[in-house]
Image (cartoon, rainbow, N blue to C red; front, side, top):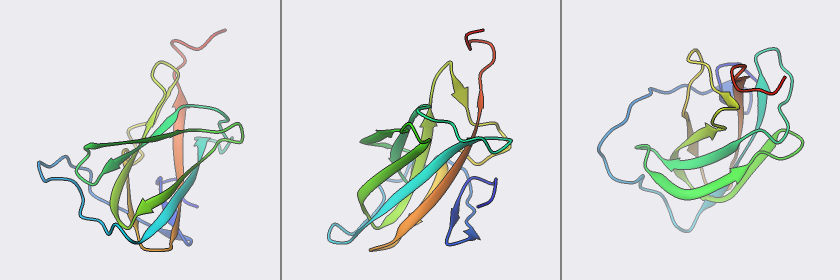
Length: 130
């Protein structure tokens, strides 16, 4: 996996970060896949139970779906309709995605596919307990 934020099948996926005014992503309602991923810091240490991942439409609008990062530093979104999506990491006052990494992460999901995502975060040292 690459530090750029998103890989699928070993190939780096890129995207343009922009917020548009288009409506929700057009997706198939009969075909789904899954999005799974891991949360790491910049030196490669997995970040267990850190934050929440929000699934958003390709235009950045909320879908109402989210999942907490588990004790192994992983997350899984199942039964996601095929189409274009964004993932947003959220851990206010605890950690954030540094500006050098793509965030939100753009994902294109095809039917019966599993997309692997790696999100790099940095702990917010100003509010961390000492």
